[in-house]
Image (cartoon, rainbow, N blue to C red):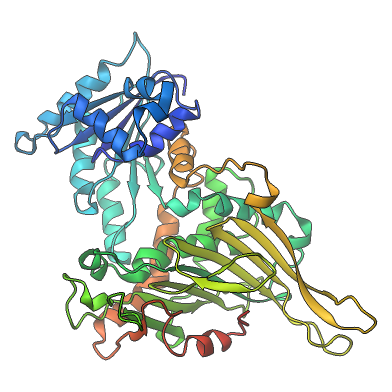
Length: 487
């Protein structure tokens, strides 16, 4: 970033990620940060807000805190003054330009999606950079279904080109998700096995021990499918199934992801299991309907597992079991290769489990699936389960593992937070980790028919499961019917 650059944070949140980029010494000296929000704050109040969002005292931040805050300023939006506040914002940005320098402007819209369009129009009308690049950065949800997603895109399109819209799915910034392509295309041994001739099934899951934690009113309008599966799990599936791109440049990478998602038929209710958590068996944790702002007759799914297929030669017949749920047990190994214990984690657990086909029993017996496990979070890891001979005089087999756990195999791993990585890419104009409109449309086509059936058919009700259990009754039989073998 050799030119003058400005990051405008509409909603005045998100400073934590930019502060961390500052601490890494990545941000240009010419980059400025402007908070732009309805809240009435002085400059000093804004600096205190930044400090509280970071969660560290100025003494802990040391010499970095003052230089960072010198980049920052704040403007209060006057809702009753039309475009006046946006004109003030433009003048503030112009004041940072030295001589004839071009200025890049990044507008991070930490706002409710319902006002994306109006605000984007005001930004285009008043704050668009005439000499440099301009960009809006938005986060999910990108619509409620296919129709609303297309409508949102069509309303943004007259003012902002696709190359000026950076759509954040924070999973794409996670270190292990970024490692999937290197794992696949940097290791020929995996490339040779990556097809339906060798792979039996794939499970992509994200589960959380916590419930909705007071966000029931918001979640009731969204549900687990929109909140997690249509975006995060679809991105993981696309990276797992896509063909090798011509390059890792944004255009090639995003085209291949969109291409494989178009080959996934809409999900079928017959291959779907939905649930809703009730109170825990000991009564200590409330159920979903116990939330103050959730109706007693809510049919919102807090758990869903559904099976997808990719209709091409590489993946013909391979079931992709997509699973996500809140208020579920986390099976978290205390030591890989040893017994696991069920513990309540305050964070989600996300994994891709690729099970290979069984060996024949003609020579070896009691062997298990080879299995490649990509642990996205927590404790980033890649594990390969294999069969080996048990030491001794007889021919007996035992399951063993090759284990790449970052915390144990890499000394002091410097793992950036997802938003650090994504915001840096946005500032650099690298769209390889931005969700394209084509990916978004393809993903919504997969989920919209299922969503409409679940919400439109009053006879379909999610199965209750106890908070702290591993999901609804019948889950184990459901996944087993698609060849998946639980450990």
